[in-house]
Image (cartoon, rainbow, N blue to C red):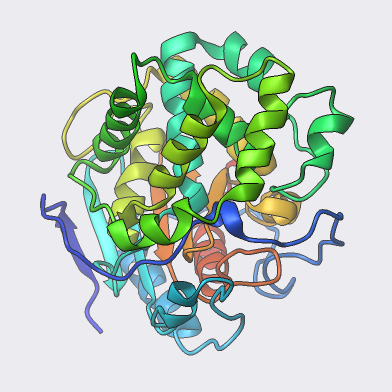
Length: 359
């Protein structure tokens, strides 16, 4: 398969979709982490390699060929649409701060963004209200419990702990400055578009299937409201949050979105500043500590990179100053993270010698 190096073409593609991460039930008890990839996959050593186009293309192709036939994991199936997504979809995209795109596989195939959307809403809130607000009102610490835990809120005195668990994500949505729900949704959707450098597709079928079945998140929002943590009506915020999970993305889109963080908040394709550079490190810090559900620590230990996953099968990793990495592959491990997505991204980071903590 040929690996294409090209600049982003501003074009939407309707593709596959699955349902929202807000409904997944991975349990509310801590799970013993065993690592997102086998220890033999990633060698923890410093590699001095040149990031030439030839080298990037070679490693990208190696990663694709190495993991394309991996049968590990399975699609989430708690909603029918999740199980029906083609499990063979596998696309990898790397985007550098100068706007160059390196990609291979099914890079235009779309899945729903799911929990990866939490990153961009948190970025919008910190842009509007500042870093102290995000830290003090929502929190920036890992919960130590499942991402959809209700117990965690009570254990932390009504705090969601961080914007990447469901409680914190619903809070983030509620604090986006808007006069009504329509304006709030328009700002959140538009912000994701700005990170992607294109108009992202919205999946009405996914949204309709979920908006009537998000009672756990409704309960979470009510508890947060009782503690005075919500910025708008709790049920309204839950509905908007469900919408943001229903946006479709491809590995190409994720690569550009990640590269915007890698480029200090400026989209390298459009040249538009999406978030002030002073806030980028704050969002990346939370991604590093809470981005991959209950397995975030193992991922950081192996790769040194901030990342965020979604049960749609997407993985977004950021190597500050060097590149954004987007991978889409629906089969998930027990933590709700893409199996091939993690393996491919970790392999690329290792082989290119771009672990930020090993420099």
